[in-house]
Amino acid sequence: MTNRNTNSVGPRMLHIVGDSKFGGGSVIIYRLASMSADNGYEVDVLTTDPVFQSLLRENNIGVVDQDVIWREINPLKDFLGLVRLWWFLLRNRYDIVHTHTSKAGFIGRLAAKLARIPTIVHTVHGFSFHEETSSKARLLYSTLERIAAFACDRLITVSEFHRERALEYGIGNKDKVVAIPNGIPANRVRAEHNPDDVRREYGISPNTVMLLALGRLAEPKGFDYLLESLPLLKQKIDTPFKLVFVGTGSLEAKLKQQTVDLGIEDSVIFAGFREDVGSVLAASDIVVLPSLWEGLSIALLESMSVGKPIVATTIGSNQEATNNGEAALLIPPKNPEAIADAIVEFIRFPFVRIQKSMKAKDLFFKNYTEERMLNSYAAVYRELLQTKSFLDFWPGLLNRESTRNRLPTHQLKPKDRRSSSRYDPAPRLHQTALRHDSLYHPAGGTEPAFLLNRNRDQSRFQRWNLVYPGTPASRSRGVHTLQVSHDD
Image (tube, rainbow, N blue to C red; front, side, top):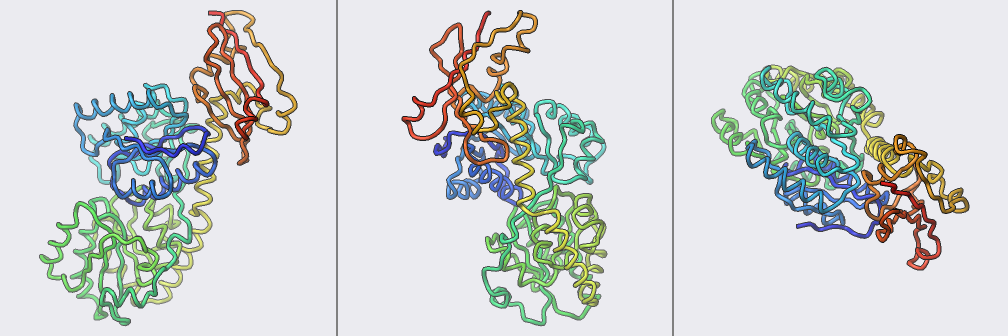
């Protein structure tokens, strides 16, 4: 079932996510979809997560509720999902397909390529192989990623670290792989409630250190090692503390049982999912993010944006975001002792807290704002649409004012069959977004330039009407026709 926003007549875009649960990456995808919709695209998102679907529908973004991509690997089931997605894409022509996550990226890119979608983009939020992957699994997954890379026009990584990793494993090339770091709006983590009220809600007194762990309760986050560090922390300091987990996930029950086994139930609070992350951040004293592997942590960026003291691991993306530890205390993954020592350092040395916090906020506003991220994605979309569309043959159409007075009717014929692809745009047009009505905007602008509408009544000729948007009446008055010859 598809719930689509049909207010726009612009290029059609589909983000493919699959059954991935709502998290930081989902927020990035939502913001990309909103940005594209604001720029005149007709945007849908294929997701089966109910939380994500609700957010999209509330903001008038189309939802494709197709259950065709699953996190678990099942070759037969995955093949059937690929076929169903391919058939869906054949029946619902999109100009751009943008895939996300490893599994959805592999299935989605292959299906889009088979369906001859003109423009295919994939964002690597984190490779399926990482710091904790065995050499055999790394070889398998990197091979699959190399295959999938041939099926897309741009491979976007969320950090320079992951771009270099992709090139190291032969995934794409320097022209195809682009790094666009994640970004978030600063007001996203604005405190909606008084920090003192939040602390009282959890029974945390003013003289108690509030440790905060943000994110999905899942294996990559390394929260089990954080729990193991708490008994060590009690031995090292007399200062009272409470650890608050904000988030839900598959390991929630296991982590709760671990607190019982370690005898630290009185020091740990599982707060569940909260929309007002900014309020919890404002109430906290230290943020602890012991990730084992990560794309570019949204929780890390949120903490940096409000200048919180951060304990994080030395995985590549964390080192890049914090400028090799200038903005956080970095510790090795899977090391409870190091986690405890870093927390003690922040508690005992206020100067270190202040220094790291100020640097974190400075780096965030320099490198990780949402505006910077969205502008970079918009430039990629615009470049790909221009290089794969009618604009290749008529670059002057990018200028709306000059076009209005200079569009005559043309009949283009190739000089001979051997060079027809050079002179006759029809072969390219058949492979582009121009199969249906498509609205294009001038580069860097928001006002529509023209509407391309194919006249399907021609047999030997394909007629493409250039129609200036406006009232329905202007559709008939302002038409200029490009007649393209088919001498096949």
